[in-house]
Length: 272
Image (cartoon, rainbow, N blue to C red):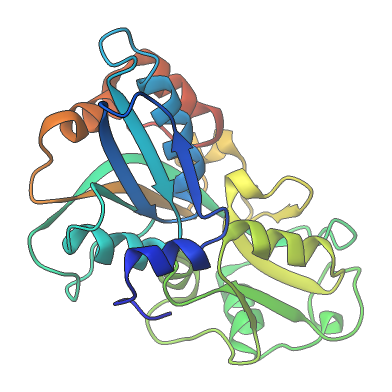
């Protein structure tokens, strides 16, 4: 995906591209773009924020998607107020941006419900996704037969970056034969329709899929919160410099407000 594409074009390409949380025309506007993993949480938090008595009718949100790299690029160029990122900062990221952590998230390896693999080690995951193992007959506990269909995310995705860092390591890459999808939702939908598929997704998107235990630990919200499940990553709202004004207040709200913390805890891991 072209990271220099203007914001309007990004919105046209994004899945569920825009959600406007309305308010009077005079209200302050917070625009966000980026991670399809962070977007569901950001939407819940934004809806709760505008219901606060001090902000009701005074703040509105426009939430776009497109992938973590898109959000980081957009905010660095002043196209949006905040970028949504589900990956950690990289040395190559634009200068002058600040990653404001708001939650943690579990990344689950997932298969079709008809292929409930009992567990996978890191070595097995690396063998499958790198293409060393290409048939389900080579995977212990698999009930599927025939070729393994890899379904992964595009390079702009923070979930792809997290999967690479957590599960694959620095030396292995996903096989070039893998099918790539531009959002968690499209990836999950593809795996649900293919009994031979395997992929990975944010925990929020795994309903209707089989979450494969990793290193003997099931990918559950409880295990992510306790720290037992090793496949977790950070969620960020990225600002251009230190956040100011209503954006600063929104970030503070996500981290400390009791309502916000309950929303985070519903499908993600709160910071406290």
